[in-house]
Image (cartoon, rainbow, N blue to C red; front, side, top):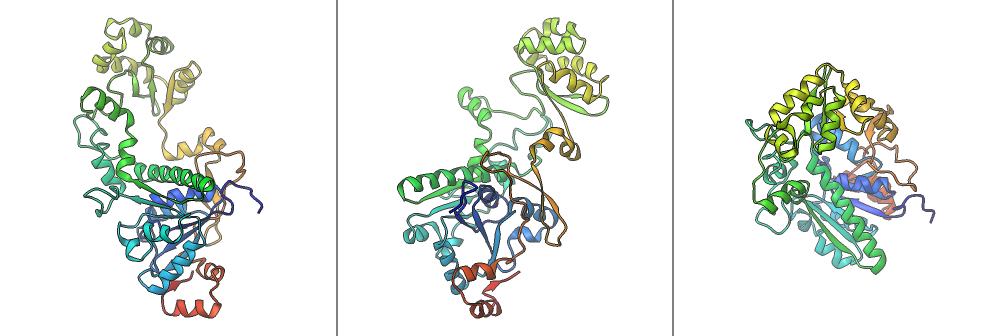
Length: 396
């Protein structure tokens, strides 16, 4: 077998919906796996929620093959079992108990195929009292404490402005799947992988949780800025925008003040060390912001970044997309569209020397590859036609 990518020859059956599970299998696609997306005849839930759903499909289902099955039907369940038997990895994030009701849960699959890697993404884990609750990104942000520490001190809790927990859960799941697959290559034994949005959301806040566990002091909302160091993650408004910077060590704070023409701020006894700067943050920010208000964002960034001060221009989405660093990364891909018009989608945020180019195939139409996959499984054309007529399978 000719291997051009790490997972060439590996087959994955993806029963995922929305983001978390499809994000995991999207990484496997980009590593070379043949990922087969199985959806109900009416399509996965993302297909019915407008532009947001279209974005999920486009960015987390590139290069997959799509099959539509009515898994409530025993014949469709048999097709799914044959599909799984041809695979190495199964991934799903359906509500706990649904796959088991079809006879396709982890226990059933591993009993028949002990070499299988079977991954499940859930909202709240598979062992606690919330096992059967529907779980989405926003619930995990809320219940992990993430929303509690996000926002201004005198405002209501805020969610992060993107589905960060869903996406991170996909990355975590892919990492664990790859570990289980490496183990299988070594031992011949399969494994189960369990990832929950709640656990990932808590783990994303490792520093906050670590400080809480060490000190017993509960984190609170403080808007921008870090609660125990200053200036750190503080926003500076410029003539044409804003930037964020960190210069909390004494050396870097002194350097910052001299660069902006305010050495007197570094010499001010109120700001003599980090503890004092945290205690007098508001006064310090008034002094720093007065200097930055006379500069453009580009002028400020040139001044700071060429002199070793950590800073980032706060970009809009169009500005981020025009960034020379983003363009150099190749993160945005031109992919094929269903109507023949190319679309732009996000690639995976990593680079391997062995993977010269990511797939330029777009996300598949509902059931686009059903007939092709059934033929691979040995179903004659006449049988496929009958399955379609009986609404057991769907074709694109």
